[in-house]
Length: 165
Ligand code: RP5
Image (cartoon, rainbow, N blue to C red):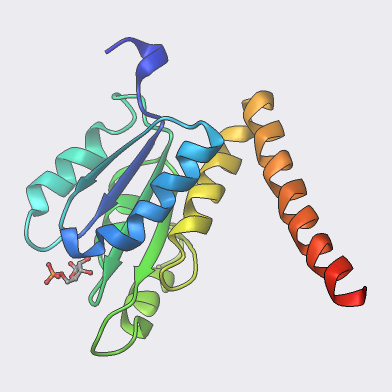
């Protein structure tokens, strides 16, 4: 694939049951004009696929990985163990423990192997954070992020104006 067309963000998730949440990261990257790929990679059910994906990520042109998983959520941490790329972890809400299990599994990484962990089901913020990381080397993208933040402010200020009228 032409380098200019290659995805920069790899969105991975442990199961297709994570897709409704992880689509929010993709939607944010669409809005901010960032190329991404999205697939299922399970740390427990497809361990070799996880290894191959993370091992080949840099060579394939990825610059950030967004990894969502629920329960015993080892996918983000194992990806971070294998690749030097920044990994953003999305704890998926579970029925048994409401995602507390996912959050603690992802956030409590040992020293030396960080995962930037967002809130439970915080895939939208993961998409924004991935864009911000890429924006440090792309001024046009950083300006799109800045515009997104200005739009957020405007939306709040419109509500303030309505409330205080
Ligand atoms: C994890 O187990 C996945 O990330 C998912 O959140 C959870 C449940 O997976 P399914 O049983 O719905 O496939 O690996």
